[in-house]
Length: 186
Image (cartoon, rainbow, N blue to C red; front, side, top):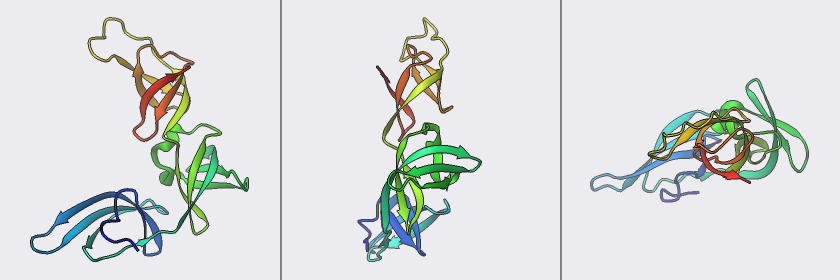
């Protein structure tokens, strides 16, 4: 059981027999009373978001999640398909549960999978991935008073701002947490 101080951003809790990820947590002091924490929780099975307030002595159950490794295969319709690295079994997770990371997934990318009661519920990418530049317009000379950037398109279709010297065919490193260009890979 987790007390109010242990329930923070990124924690995985169990509520009504479903796993929830804490996506926002704000602690407040209420007059003479104890403190309360207002939580925004995302259901890892359905993707639904709800708000919950817990008081100073309330406790929440920690979700029992297993972690595994899998390899991204492909997207078909509303499903994203992966292969378990140990059993080689294929499984799918709906696109909504995977979220915005599909712009960073290329065939063969290894991901970390969270498994709740034998069912994969969520995936996490490595912090940085390397992708090939599919399209990069030429840089505009003379527009370099500040940090000059241009919008490039990566092999997955994801668009990101990068320096003017990046050209088509380059391999670039992208931060998956905030979707930004990090560096060109030699």
